[in-house]
Image (cartoon, rainbow, N blue to C red; front, side, top):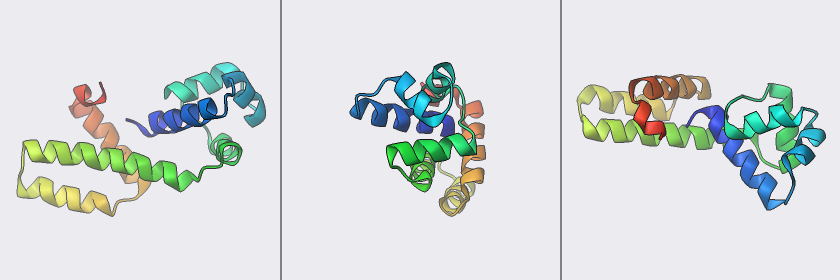
Amino acid sequence: MTLAQVIGAVAAELRRARRWTQTDVAMRIGVSTRRYAKIERGEASPGVDTLARMADLFGFRIDDVLRLHREHVNARVDALVSDTDTPELRGLTATLVEASPEVIALVGSLVAILDPAADE
């Protein structure tokens, strides 16, 4: 999953739990319903201001969403490493555990390019 997909999945789950429509949320965070629907589907990333309004509305912390994304990427890297266990890949995995969210997002994108079936 990309970071946009993680954000969208979290937003959709929290919205449904509150029994709100996408229009309800869109109006509360100041975007169009069409834009919010794309965010929920992971087709668009919210801007920093929109993400902050979403976090306030739903009561989640942005770093928790980044942690979920990091865990997903680490799990995918671990799965790839277990299929081709080499010292180089073990070292890469150890490095990723301490990587910044930006590096994790980049690696996630690279993994998606190299292994498109992993997103299915």
